[in-house]
Amino acid sequence: MKRQLTASWLAAALLLLPLAGCEHSLVARNMGNAYRENTSAQIADPEAGRTNEPGPEGIDGATGEDVMENYHRDQGSATRRTPGPTLMSTGSSN
Image (cartoon, rainbow, N blue to C red; front, side, top):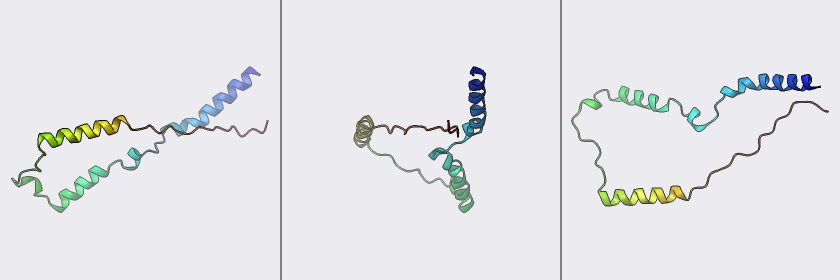
């Protein structure tokens, strides 16, 4: 009985092993987007980096401090979403 149970667990683990490499997250769906966007921008304007135009201006210190305080306050009140239960079936009717 114990040997059969161990064999069943081993078979289940081997069947589920290929699923370990699957990534179904937002990161996986967006993988490579920044690279493609940068490549497209360089094709559209290859001389963009050679101009001596100043970059975007920042914000003053007081505004920056307010933004950071609001961000940290909002992040502290954020709630985490807990994943639902994971169900596994062996296909046995016993």
